[in-house]
Image (cartoon, rainbow, N blue to C red; front, top):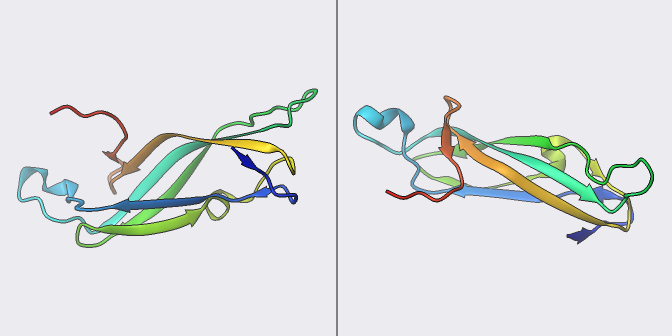
Length: 122
């Protein structure tokens, strides 16, 4: 939870970094380092404390997408702000707000899931 500034405008920094990324096209041959762009995607939900009358506390979920550039198998830290990715988010000033990030995935250029959170057992 975060107390919202008196202006009511919200901005959140998002950082991504991947190391030792292998080229997914090398599945049937030598696997080398990946160079290109990966696509990060997640669903964001913003809830604020404005729950009175017919006003909804939680507006609809929205999808945030951005590119992660990689070279030689390394995708250095990239920082984006939610306002630059989606547009300004405004909530009720001087109230509490909750931000939820869900359904995170990173996809290769062929739109295949490349990274997805979970438990993997070999």
